[in-house]
Length: 97
Image (tube, rainbow, N blue to C red; front, top):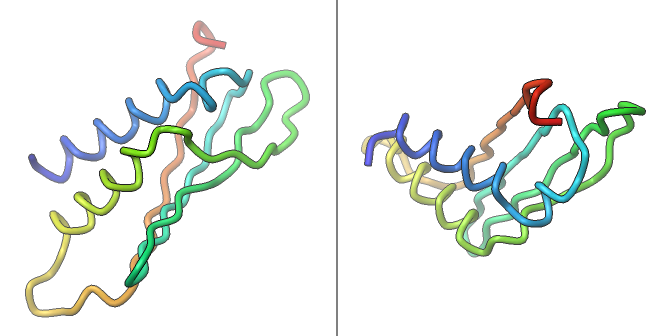
């Protein structure tokens, strides 16, 4: 799978995630931190009506593995994978709110 395909798949998984999709949000900001022994995925969902930032993380256990797959696809073979952070932002169209 290419890097672009992985980015789209991760985005779709985040939007369809039961914990994230249950919130009324208009903007989702997610950070994946990949370190030697663990991958952490969390961020903020910005509420539709108030605009308040609510801490969130996906409930789908496959999402961190997809970020690891993306990391591998983006790896420069001349460098070690010591640590990597990936940042993503999704804006929900008005019709989906």
